[in-house]
Image (tube, rainbow, N blue to C red):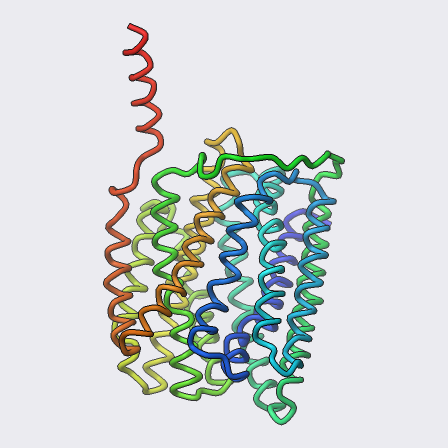
Length: 396
């Protein structure tokens, strides 16, 4: 099987997992009686454990088929335990524990996969590769989200068993996709030696800036869940329609966005996506008409898709400039996950002291400040030049 065929099949299967397992997981957690804090924690805890895995484990593991498969097996075990935990009398703590275990292993495969792809894909092919992967993702999430949303509503009398079945479908999909990518990994046998490491050494200004923006982006998902499920009591089908509208808009527009990236540069399009998300979140919490919510969610999903494609492209473009490539991928993912972990906790703290509409307005202001904050972060390249100058001066 061709390498690109494996990559595209994996993209399809992983997005089936995302739809069947995670699209309605926030709805499920809310319906199981989770508090606002637990909803925020469910968005923050997995990212936090991803960061811990990146800090102390992931970067020290060799990029081999054995390591990739082992982390995949642990991930699969955690997925199954998450799916079955919702049948327990008090499922939220158990679900969060296994979600955290999943996060430790999933970040290993997520960090190793770009390193595997760089061995077989030419650098100039990455923008088109990621765009096609995103189109596949949008198609699967659009059609799958709608079908699963209707199926969950139609079988609501069997709650929560209907969610268990959906999540087990996601388990099978992610296992099949992982096996495809594992076939591309080198079959080397290397001893693993864990030792103290220096974190953030490959981080530059852009990485820190994107991490801060990530925190702003991930402040809203727990608030969306609280607003849609606990306040407006939207059904799975109504929430699935949000996925459909954003997916259609993104699928139609991403090929045009790719051409804009080639013409104006990746960073400028990334900035435009951040501005687009600021506009969509500003009035949120004050609108309750469904068609307005659908329009806002469609725009938000489209801007999020653009930011993901541009972020992945920037990561792969910069990787070739770093000698310690695995350390670079680990540092990149580490600071992104720290941003993803901080965002929901900040949103939860806001919600404890102010109304929901005010939280959305403040998040919009914070995102705008984060967008303008890039010059505040130190430029590693300038630091290197200054350190070299200081050494030469001292030598004189």
